[in-house]
Structures are given as structure tokens and as C-alpha cells.
Length: 408
Ligand SMILES: [Zn+2]
Image (cartoon, rainbow, N blue to C red; front, side, top):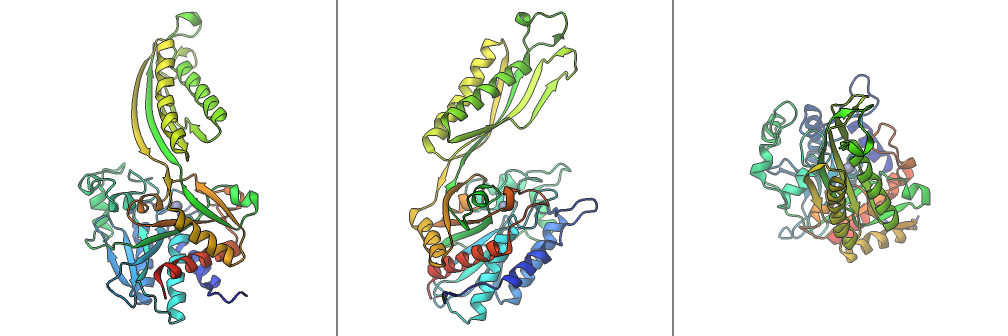
């Protein structure tokens, strides 16, 4: 024992397990709580119920973000918010998002139990539609809250059934009008990657979030007979897509600090004996380095143009996402690292490979992220797992950071 206040692990894991019972579907091992679905509503209701039990002041903003705040000794100050999200992908694990929200709640419970009065108000935040499965864009709640996307426009976005975001918010009773304006934001999350687990580090000190760019591209060629058309007389759309992917992979491999994925590909006409006239595909490009991200995006577009020209194809391209790399303020990163080391935990600094609400909150207030190891790096799967000791360590760091920021 080092004399520092610690969270109650049993209460935290019980909360995670109880939340993890919401969104079970027959035939699936994991949880499915698509954003603003009935299951997401049920999860929010449970969280609000728990918040009210702790005497928190609950508010919901116009994009459905939920906040529960405990008053500080100086009510004129803006609150320190800890949080994440409760929506999930299809057949997800129980930790992604929920771990951050429920650890935030555990921190507040623990502080209340100890009758600690913080100077600033301190609270829990739960952001709408982080995953982006049912409605796009992903990280919708934090993006809209921080002015990165217009509210009026996002209300009209529809799911596959034609239900709008606004209708879905109303449907579960989470179309509010009053949010909070955080003074600082802390997000605790499972790493969802293999680095901490493989390196044996207990706490990931997140320095920032990779930049991410998405394109939808179409290469148009000419359908023709696969047996009678000589290679040099083809306009093969698939050959263009293959060459593009190979060249981009070669480039990011040489560069060493970027990744590139062509994750979706559709061919027309799509027959074994026909040269493809259309390749319709996506490109996902990411880097944490500002210069690499900027140059890499230009290279993706330039290479696509060159390949199309060389092969006599027509290129159509549309950029569907373009989020710059985020670098958290050094003093916020230091707080996480100092808190973890002060408790004797081993740390590793790393950027996040996945997007998180913290990357947008960073544009509105000082923000930090804490990672704990994901066993084998598995996430977005029912096999997602983090050891209880790691969950405890992460929540303790969150507790320390929030207390330090809120002041006692
Ligand atoms: Zn998440």
C-alpha cells in the first residue's frame, strides 16, 4: 500500500458485468448496443439511475451526450469530466467504452464515500455514437459537441431503415438541451491493440491519436472476355486496384510510420471469366506524424491518378474522412504518467491507433487518455478481455488524475 486513495475493484467489475448484460442477442456471444437503439437507451437508463443514486446532477445535451456532475466547493468553476461511450459495434466485448464510463462513475462513488469535497465539480460523461455503426460519422457526440460537425445536419442522417438521428434520440428519450462545458477531460479506455500486452506495460500513457483519412474510389475500365483479350489490350479495373494497393503498401512499409488498408472491394460484373470493368473500393490511411500524414494523403491521390492513367482507367475519388493527428498537451500527458509512476505502475507512452472521443474533446479543453492492456490486443469482439488488475490500475490512475485536476 502506498497510502493513495484507490477504487473499489469489485464494485467496478460488478458494474461492468451488469452493464454487459444489456444488448445480448440470441446466437451471439457478445453485446450489441448500436447507437440510439433500444439497447443503448436501456444502457443509458441504467447509467442515469446509478448517477442519480450518487446524487449527481444529470443533464443531456442536444446530441444526446449524458453528463452526471457532483458539485465542487466552488460552484462557479467548470467541471472536470471523465468519460467515454456506452454504444458498441455488433457482437462486441463488454469493456470498449463501458470501462471508461463506469470507471468514471466508480471514481465519483469512491470520492463521495470518502466524503472528499473537490474544489471543481467532477463528473461522468457518456458520448453518443462513438462507434458509428448505425449512424455516421462515428464519434458523433464529441464531434458535434465541440463544433466539428453541424447539429442540424447530423439530425437528418439516417440509418439503413430510414430512421434519422433526431428521431432515434427522441425515441429513446435522450434529445436534451443542456450539456456541460468541461474544464478538462480524461478518458480511460482499453488499448484495443497488442502493444501494452506484448511489452508488458501496465499503463499506456496516450500521447495523441493518429490522423485518419478515408476515400471511396472507383476505377472504371472495360469488361471483356478473359480468354480472348490480350493483356496489353485490357482496361482491367481490378489490376488497377491491385497495383494501387501494392504500391501504397510498399510506400507505408518504407516510410515506417504510417499504415494503409484497402478493406472493401467490389467488382463489376464480378464473373470468373470476365475482365472487371469496375473496381469500387475504400482506402484507409493513418499516421501519427503530421508531415507523414500530409504527404501520405497526397501520395495516395497521386498514385491512384498515375495507376489509372497508365492502365487507361477512369478514376473517381471521394474523400470521406480527414481527421488530423491529435497531440495531447504535454502537461496533460505528464499528469497521467506521473500519476501512474507515483503508484508504482510501469508505463509506456504511445499514440492511439483508434479514434476516440478524446480527440475531439481535446479541441475544447485540456484532455488526456489512459490505456490499459487488452489481452492479445483483441477488441470489437466478444473475446475482448482485460485483466482485473489492469482494470484496477487504470481506474486508479483516472482517480488520481481527476482529483489532481479538480483540486481538494
Ligand atoms: Zn471505444
